[in-house]
Image (cartoon, rainbow, N blue to C red; front, side, top):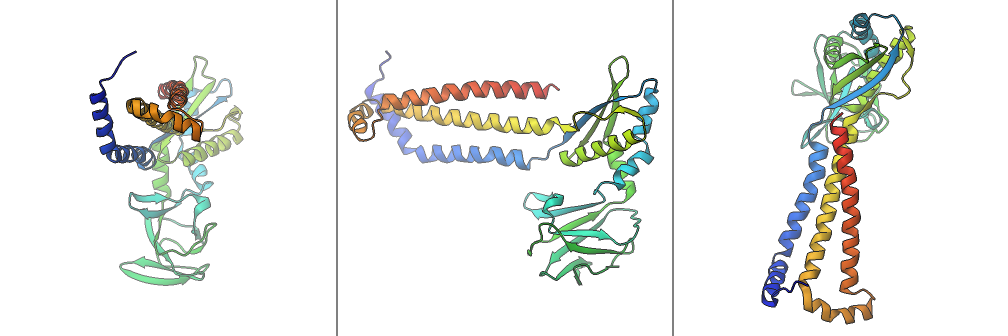
Length: 320
């Protein structure tokens, strides 16, 4: 058994106790920094799907059809991508999902936008809202037809998560040309295998959900045209979503292990004073220092096994 010099041991314990709040504070800052980075760091998602094409089709023509303007335009017009909603946060504009919209923008006629149009809207009460344009507010009622801009007539209605707030809701209306360029540039298609019977579609963008919806709709429309032998059994999915989650789990496991190791070190360094207190502790709550150390050691072992498993999972996903 290794014996620790009593004076050195007391010095270490005293030093730890004097600076324990600094140590705890540093650990908390590190703990908070990981989820903040994972949540707010800009992410790019690659969503993929595969399906079988009919025998005898020319690979080049299939890829040309899948990336054609005509097909992309059909997909875009059947998806809610022409209007995007954002809320202002300290980290920048954050897009609001469709089921969390406080308000909705609705076209009242066919629109023709040559370039993106931005609206800044403030909800006043249950009946009214105001639009900021050229540093001037214009007031409207919900469901009232608006012809404020030259590109289209529209109205603003209450959304599924309507609320009255002082913060503005930023709306961006995209043109067909913008959307065709964006989705066309980020769409890839390639045949897999020597027999050229399977094709893989992938879409890269900032929203995994939008990528999934886009690929699933594209495959659905292409399938209805009779060019696909069968619809994919597995819908479009994003590997990066899984990678992001596993990376977060690895970081949390490392923090938990470090926390238990700190507790283990503190108990071991407390040495004689802890041993003297064992009889009192075991008499009052039935838990001795040895039992605590055994429990901590067991926890560290279990977390290390789980950590190695998650690290292997992360490594496998990263190689895809």
